[in-house]
Amino acid sequence: MLKRPTPIPNDYELLVAPLYAGLCGTDIQILRGLRSDPTPIIGHEGVARVVSAGSGVPERLTPGTLVCINPTHRDDPSFLLGHNVDGLLQERVLIPRSAVCNGLVLPLCEIVNTEISTLLEPLAVVQYGLRLLAEHRPHTLVVFGDGVIGHIAVRAAVELLGVTTRIVHMHHTKRGMDWSSNHPVPAVHCVLHDTKGAQFLSELPADERVAVLLATPRDATLLCLDTALHNLRGELVIDLLGGLSPDAVSPLLPDVNLPQIRAANCAGSPNPAVQVTVSTITGTKVCLMGHRGVANKHLSDAAAELTKHPLRYRELITHVVSLDEAANIMRQLAASRDRVIDDRRLIKLAVQIAPEHNLVGGAG
Image 1: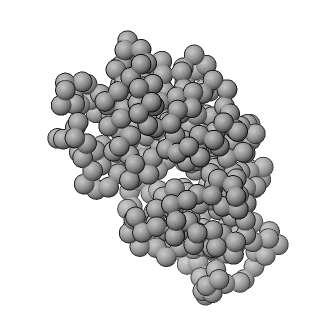
Image 2 (image 1 turned 90 degrees about the vertical axis):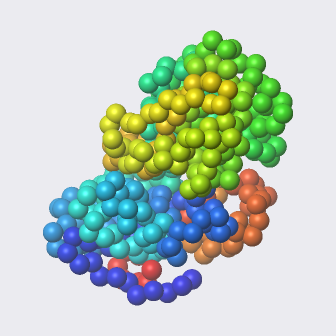
């Protein structure tokens, strides 16, 4: 483990000790060299304990407080936790003035001080997206992606969209389908994203409103978007939640700036969210939206959902390891496209950083 000096917080800064941190799909892309984010320490999901505070820090953030850090600053692009600011996969993290003064450090109830806290931020992202899609009152929801975001989405959808909404979960691989078969969600149709899966989508009713959530890595988003545009015949609304390269263009939407649409809503702003109606080259109208990050309210709502329904999501945390063990797993993930760790498919990796009693001193 790399040893670094423990930072001392200046005015309006916080030093926190991460307790649990999650590894997300974006982190895995960074490990595999698919992104060029500058920070050497990743991790933006989880909870921490305040260790020390500089002068001017609000009293609600006194040492000992359990907190989560909203990783996305709405107005300061220089703060993106785990991307251009050192993330949570270390023993101590200095939270800069910009984040503290903007209220991005949220006190939490102790009940989420478990590995389930690693689902807090991804659940908030999913709930935000599903609420935007719910405004269109869809008859059907199609979720592309069998990573943790996709699995969270099909579990959260019924409560946010209603029990009458048809839910279709499109999977990238047969192994992903097998995992879902062993961890079924009532009333969710699991489909493999292949020729038969595309045919399944084309056979959905043409007179329905269809919402699509692209819970996909950046190297799969365009393919899934085009599958949706080619095969879904109903009134269509699509959330570009998945990653997109800066120059991403769909052949069906050659004049549409997809990355710009995806980035138009940042950290819950503006409200109401930007939604854009465009036409494909065949003349089909589709409503597009996207979002980066969430507002504090979304994180609070997600914490309430995890507190109320922990068993709804707990099975998604397939691996719980120490920081040293996590380093070995990350090396495996960086070297291979395989997501099988210890003979089990990895959905969510939760890292327990350090024992609770180790809150004073030490290197990060």
